[in-house]
Picture: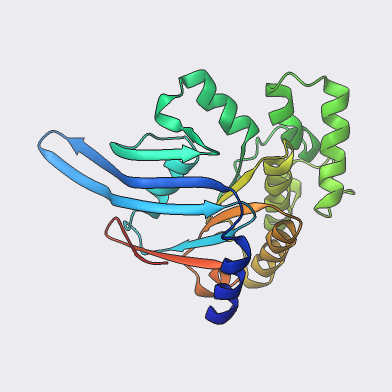
Length: 239
């Protein structure tokens, strides 16, 4: 999406509810006397149904920020509000519930369990949420059909192509109807053709109302997003 199109799309979403808000967020890692400031006073708002891409070189802080957005790590300072709730005020059980209910994760390396079928991998978050087995299986089957894998439900991960495995991962991310999808280099292990297929799927989900935050180092992949953010040395320098 070109810059002018992004600007137009931003106008469409700026009045939508804010689902992610970072205020002067920072993250410091310290080992002995060595202190590394991975994030430096990051302030950011992401609104419902936005598609935001974050680009930056290795070590720029984009993965650290994604881990905080996904409640996988905690900031050293500043404030992170998710759907209006201050994440710092939540206990471990509440954070685990948010990760399972409100956020769908898509990773570069798929993170599928090798001994489980596509259906079982997709159903796993529902089983963690104590959904009855037959209901979880029915929902997982429907989700796999939605991502074009209705004929692969009983296949193990090693029996699927890279693109098919990533589609399973997307289906798993969607199974609990999350408010936000966090996609960390989702095309990093895929060839160009398959990468475009996965991005087409994410674009379709966005058009259906999904909020997406995407990390990528590829400019052509970032073009699918409404808004582009650039990170450098722990700071947002654009967007």
